Image (tube, rainbow, N blue to C red; front, side):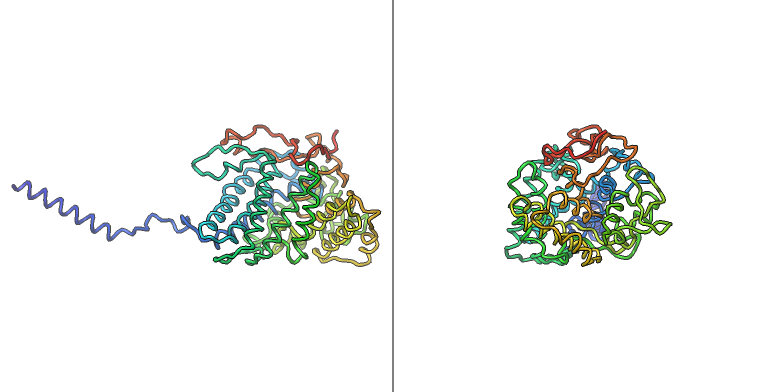
Length: 468
């Protein structure tokens, strides 16, 4: 009897103890406030925009493609190797991982949350950002994961979709976003660091991106030209409407990625002579906006691949290089060049006018518009004199600080006349980034090796690179 009493007493005490513990233990004890399970849309959006701008529009992508397009020359460390077309599989690991695990995953989250809350403007913004990011990724690598890329634990080895199918998805995302931005929206766009929640500007950005991606495919579908003109006409009306990201003055945490690179990796890059000489020979007023003086007070670039450490540096006060500068996702200047190219051959007079508008906007973007120079060098173009070389040449000048020039060059006949870098190691200018070593290791569907000369689907029969 005593044993039964003791057992009962113990059980009562244990029950009381558990009851007390339930009241004493904080149910949120194991919830990490720095890793919330659910995040408000207004907090996700600025994170996506900052990550996208920093990594895809201002860091590894811009620096490497600027070396390939001979805006810059690599003269030290990793940049020196890249200046000789030696791009390793480990180089793009961080870029790839950020694009998939951070930016695009969060874009998919924005789209899902927008659908759940029946907020079509939020869904549209997520689709526009996703279209840009997957577009940038496929333009760097070609075939990449997309249809199985965001399934989480359900798929650790996503398949690699064809670039052609991804382009279909990009244009579909943009068309859907354009339509959704015309609908009523219960939850306003907040936390937007690009357009301040302005749905009209987001719609114009979608049209601008649509024009870009359509034009990329012109060699495999020449009929897109009329669609490009229509999209451009519905896009930005001036530089003031550009889709861009503004940075802050804090050099360690808020500054442009190119400013941070220049201050942290001094001596790795210089201006390339190909661009500097072109600007100098035409007395282009953008020369001092792009280029700083060297030790002898000259504007002097390093010939591609020569690695002249004493050559001029990029202007530290340039809009892409100063601490509180910008990264441009897509802007008015580019859209006007797209319009000029699209009209060439069917309405050359209108093509010439769009070309003039593009160059003027570029000069104004860098605050160096010179009427006399413009009249003598640009305004003289007419429908009888304008041609593709002039359009792509001036677009190459205007795209300094952006990666889009590499896309233009790959779908061209080398109209800007790039030569091989001295002592290059590949035999031609690269057409693709190598697939990252991390992806090759962990995804059995990832192509192996370091193929830098594989062509993009949209290149068609183009082979712009000079070869040995």
